[in-house]
Image (cartoon, rainbow, N blue to C red):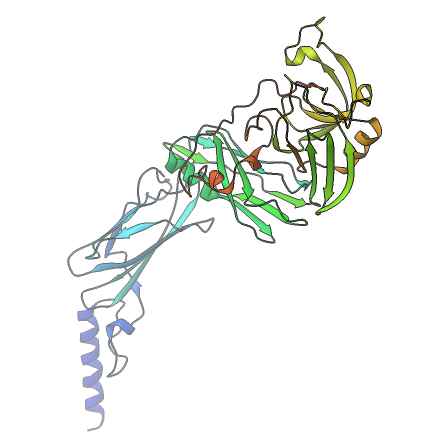
Length: 417
């Protein structure tokens, strides 16, 4: 008598399980519910335009997932590549179709997880992996400067192997170029031209900061059949805040370290017709010896302005040949008059001290000169001559793009005295 009800219960459950279908468990007790069941393989409920085994997907084509029949629907889709980047997509309101809205990365492997539910609310899951084809055109990026310690004015540079002009493409590049600093600062990229970007913080880098730069551009679609390539990461440290401020009207240079004056040097700057540029410049490098000739800046041999001189302790601040250097021939004018052809001259002893005190990235500022303003780009690092609002307009992610004047000066090695 007691065995009969048990057998009937088992038979009833078996029939119910067959009706609901494979993967749905109906006999877990009186309180069981389809939504509490373990997800089943939804391979039969959805189709996907992923490539067949052994083939690779075209990254220029979107990924599409479609629900089969009328009784089931897609509830969620996640697609992530080997770099951990998620593929953006959009699911239709009725759950019948999901389509990627962002471009696939090239040369990588995707794992796609599709969640579904059938007409009874039972959940299903399908997981698919596939690879995307390697790009035919690669956009390489070279980050600069080289690793090392720099002054507080040093910008980060990114040189691209191909021009990028469209705003959407520029935005893709900027998103992939990551700059982190400790302590953290506000900063932004600025497009100098179609192949070059500079990054700087709102204010000078903090003394002692550590700056790391890396690119997530590899495999990212930038333009038509153009994808980012791998890039070598970069790490910089920032030294003391060293600033040299030259007042061309008083013929004095004041040198500060971390806000304190450490030296005041009598100097001479550019005379009328050759006036030194006003504004903020950044130390580009140091050369113990430079041969300076007037012909390099268009002065003909034999003219009254002609010169051909050996110059020592030369600290470069523009590509066109402006230096801070030793000028023993003009010591009588230093501190009193401007007699150079654009450079800042001083005694050999003071030039040696300056040469040994500054490093690349330190600030050299000229005020009260009759010369033109320092160009923000193209003749060194004049980045700091743009205020922060102007700088931000050069970003494709912030306030729109601004055409830079960053064509490199053909006379990047022309020295002047």
